[in-house]
Image (cartoon, rainbow, N blue to C red; front, side, top):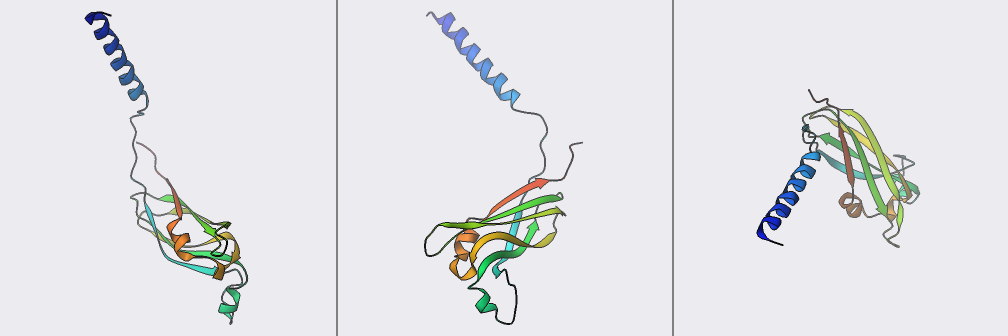
Length: 142
């Protein structure tokens, strides 16, 4: 292939790449969406009865805490807390909580249900480390 052919091929590749990249852009970008959790604790399903420690031995367990919307717009926030057994290291469920219409800068308390094990069989460090936060911003491009 001569120099003119190589130059034409390189130009065609560059043009194709530019068109492909431009096609991925829709021209609209939104605000950054972020949220933080705090005060995470394990709570037995039986709740705060006079013998809370005994309830920690009974199935099932929830994760409770507070989530703060650190975004500049209102959001819906989905929290997921995968849990594994300390003894077997196998999955024992996933705590789930969906909070709607969390105002920008606002906080809401939550209880995430769906863990099918007693609280005293869970590792809170693992639950905190593996938490998943999904955020949907409530805004419309102008």
